Length: 193
Image (cartoon, rainbow, N blue to C red; front, side, top):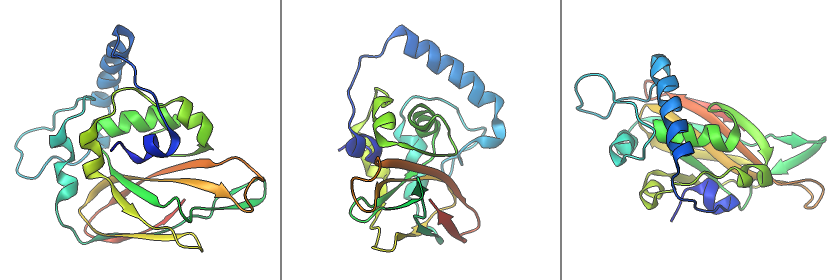
């Protein structure tokens, strides 16, 4: 299974090319310059965090630890004055790592937040999906009022993602909604998408 964005929006795989490697190197230099925006180091690690945009399972292990954090969220997105809903689509929570941060930047043109037509995001789907990635995604149902929740989360940065559908159907394009959220001190975070 692949990540939520890819399975929800569709994607295609491409071989890794020289341009992608050059882009990854440039992105790595940019990430190293932003030391305050680093994900938490895996528990028990010593020394500075190693920054790489390659998929590494070890970058995700922190997200599997039990925690006291909670996200209470709701979708309030409106497009063209029309309400949108996430019932049936659900919401996923993806741990932030250098690899996922780069994916969010490619998919959503931002590592922080976005609301873009799903077709546009689908067209940006980067190569290099990993079957291992789906093991680290958390999923929540989105009720009829657009509410969802995640419990037992460890401290760290996460990406909340959903595909919002217009209500009534057919009055607008499906929208891919992404927002970065950070849990600190096991607190409950109120999140609006």
